[in-house]
Length: 422
Image 1 (cartoon, rainbow, N blue to C red):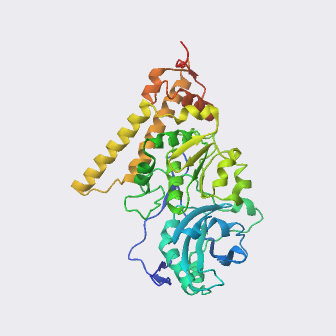
Image 2: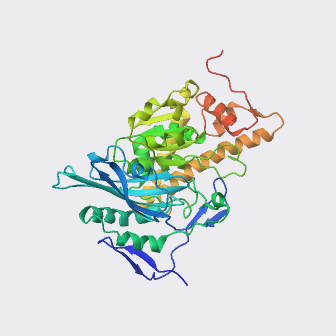
Image 3: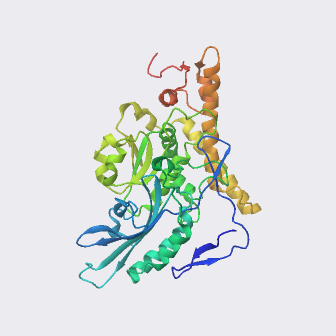
């Protein structure tokens, strides 16, 4: 028998209702494959309230279940510098789980609280792809916690309804739920991460970075460690992390098995330094400027719109070339055609998010299809003509191609002349 669907009303209460019809099944693809994966579990493994105490700093005020390890969540769910803003939302990682927290800051006439009350209400789940569903509920709840502190019945009811079952067998480590790292690649399969701006996070991403998304695309495809710095609010920056991961999708079998997954870590702070030290590939964002000095933690540092790297061998990838400009022109042309068809014909299928994901998926597939064909040929020779056929600049992308062949372990011989040699 189907379980009642529960929704949060504007008072922040968690109440039940029978759905008129079954909700569509949320399906994920396994990274790099076209077969359908398992139906994703819509489950919450923890709910919590974090508060800022003027004497003790950030602390977990309340949580369910009471025995769950939430160490560090008090800093992940209330970004450094949040005291300067009124509200925010934050995606983050905690061990094998992903979290979403909504933060709010309310002025109060209290010397004890130094004139401001700050709290975050958040949840943990095995996957980030469905967390957005609870954004409205969490926003209501954080307001509720600020106005009437200490009342947790709505949150407890929410947890009882949505809690996931974690099997505590002898193989506890292997029984943890799977972590869904990569956005999937089909209209009904990749994460519907909504953004408050009506145009959607992809169009904001393109407008914000412009042609530089092609630089980020190359670094994402090479699985470099990408760290994005921005002052609060951090919610919109978490979406930039997601968009970066969308640049690196490949759906050809056999590609990516030898390379680490592109992991969205979302928001990180100084408490994450130890875990970042052992990561070989990730995309994350931070509000803490101290990370810029810790060059051993990242390959690519993005300060607002300034993309930079301290690695000499990656410097050539920072230059926009003619093939990059052509790709950017084609992407914008396709976006304009889509917007025109939406306006004139009222056809909103596909949406801009689909177009963005599929544009880079097709670009990546074209590159790897060519590389696989050349590696299977007798002479294994990759020429300038091949590079142009892949949508790359034979000279400008020479360094990128060499890094790509090495990273993915593809055995071909590059015979494109180095532009500095006669």
